[in-house]
Length: 183
Image (tube, rainbow, N blue to C red; front, side, top):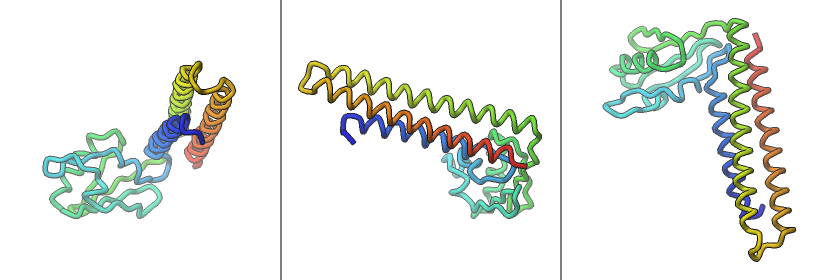
């Protein structure tokens, strides 16, 4: 790959990774520990990911269990979970915290599928914006030591990268939607 367009490939990969992280945080019908990735706990004055203050397990299909290494953190973890946007009330027995995921209703599944498609569309828009920036940068090369044929080839490569990335995004959206609609 040409160095002049490699930077745009890296930016597109970054947009794709952002989307996959977003999709991992969307909770389907089963428990997924990634829904806790964005939840931060006040650990002695420092916002810290839950995974760094306790052990996260999935003992059942629709339950996440958090076992803090320091039992004094139970209250802080509870507070962080209640303040987060995961929409589940934690229950603790003094040593572990349990998050029980309710079965998703059909309406909620459809709403989540719609949100997922919007996230995918946003990712594709980001990829297309990166392509546009790349094409603008390539057009500025005209009149320099780079031939017009080289510029056209680079633009074609950039277009192919964009199309491949959009296909990857569509595939990720399709897989997540399928996972969401499973009962």
